[in-house]
Image (cartoon, rainbow, N blue to C red; front, side, top):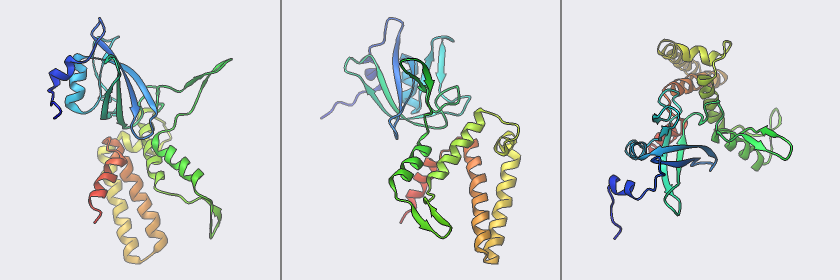
Length: 243
């Protein structure tokens, strides 16, 4: 029988350095993409275990740093793994939003080449899934010509754009306008779009139903983004209702 350890016993097995810190590598559970590297002390690791989301120690500010507390880009802990010497930690997470303060999905986006350092594009899971799906399936003939089928990955792609707009404000962005006054505009818009869907259903207008439902879904995604509720949270809830 495996011994059940309490948090103090677990922490006693961790080898912190002379400054009381341990390096931590954060990896996306879904894609295995390395997202960032930071440090934890005993207290921040204890909070990570208790809260189920990453909490680090800022060496520059000399204080605990609860990831996403201000940006909303939290990391939900899925698995914590120690290396062979118990002096480095790997944490697999569900990343909500982006991991890097620059607005990039991963902090590791600069590739060192023989003659230069080049920035590379690290895509979030939704975009990766869409690209992989498009590469894997053959193109299908549709009424308007040969096009690749659009799938549910577009939902994750739009959600990532919404998360990006939260970090990178643009004056001409409709999403930014909604997020800036989310408490007033989002309930109003979602209510309006829901009414439009009802009208389209009563009129039995197929094209209008498609258009209005897309509008409703879009504004709902913006609302989810404003509350840092991921599309995966919704998918998991929907899965419970599959009967």
